[in-house]
Length: 379
Image 1 (spheres, one colour):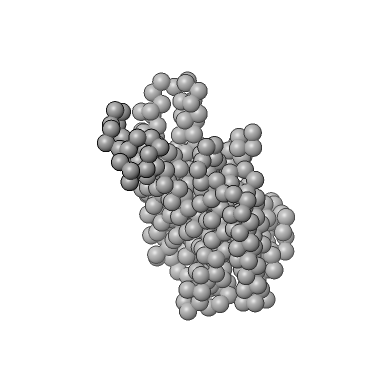
Image 2 (cartoon, one colour):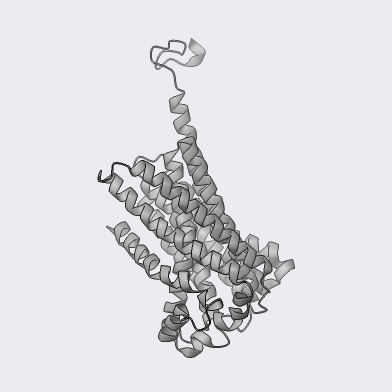
């Protein structure tokens, strides 16, 4: 029931976002064309929130106009990919209910079109990121790095899903494509979050709300993909964590999160909201409770525990490049995903190895091995 509610809400967000995404850059070629996203932000957060000095419109409009071709391609193909994602979901649901005879062929055709749209959208985003000027504001360098990582992750999970499909590994294909959909859905969810926060947290500028939303999604997107697969295979799983393992992992995770909070408080500037790191901590706690209470999946639990430590390591590596405050932002934006994606990859590899071992087991009637219950050394 909970999964159906979450999927329905996600579908509504995607459907609401498609017209915003498809038309968000039309003002660059059609002067006077309504900017629907900014109008929504102004209605929820006020005119200063949508158009003031701390808004996306104020700091990025000139760059959008200068690089309109890349952004038009990115937004249009991204909107097409989101539509195809919803079509693919309908196809799979109807196929599961036996209502669509040609589900397999239609699934492959829609999947190929989806892959083309995703690749074109991500390549266009890379062109914009490579050519657009840097915005000299706190958090923007870290957010730009996250966009590079998100684009690479979206293409990488798409490639992994396609490779699994060619191998005939349906479980791995499904898992990688669910994670790919989670990464692709960050765009509409990010916009819906910064619009909503404009009404809920009026003291924040849009850029601040954009950044804290991205901090949450840096956890939510990979954790949702990894947890979804763990949920699907939780019955009969041999990787369930016992209470002792969960206790140890919980302690390690708590220590990591406390260190993240302490380091951020020590290194952040006065302009940084005190609530900033909590947008990382809260979704981490929610997914940790979900794993502990429902899936009890050991690799995913380990990935969640490693996430705050990955934040700290990423921050430490980037200090020479960004400085202390900006590197901590970059750690929160870019660090959590790696251990969570690695946990999914480990799980899929383990399942593939186990399945292969079963397929290559002794054939029926094979007497070369020792009798049942007799040690091999006593043959």
